[in-house]
Amino acid sequence: MAHPESDQTPAHWRRRTEAALRDAGLRCTFPRHAILDWIAAAAAPFTAEQVVAALETQHGTSSRATIYRLLDWLQAAGWLTRLYSDGTQHTYARFWPGHHHIAVCLRCGSATIMSECHIEEGIRPALAALDFELQGHVLELYGVCGNCRTHSN
Image (cartoon, rainbow, N blue to C red; front, side, top):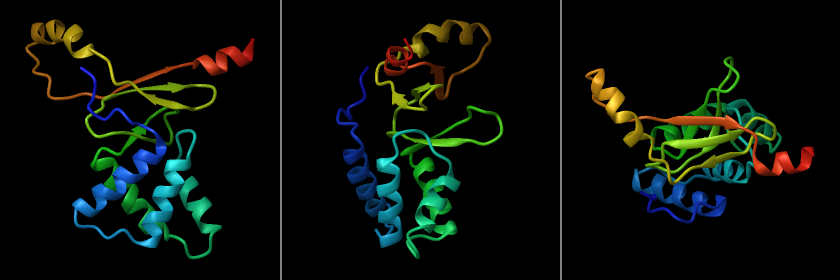
């Protein structure tokens, strides 16, 4: 079943996250605007320290604490997902609440949300055989995107 959020552009993500902040009773301060703008413009998954380094160059834009708190809130609210690709440090990628599947390119780092994935139906019998009741899941798939495959030939 497709997720109802069909416009998954970075600009729409940016507008929706700001609305979600307001709906949660949080103020849309200048530092939060700067963080959301940076994340929306990110072309690939990023670390918290990359956000800190980028916004520290804009003197006084956002404090490290503000950045980390907002990243934590965005992840808890479903607007970011953590990717555990190298085993030492996680990265974040833009996400949409209600999605659970993401495909990450190992060459360029692009992360694509998969709206259509019916893995639950495929694994439910195996889980039932284990007497395991599925409550939720997140699936990260790693490979090489079409753009990188085209440009490597």
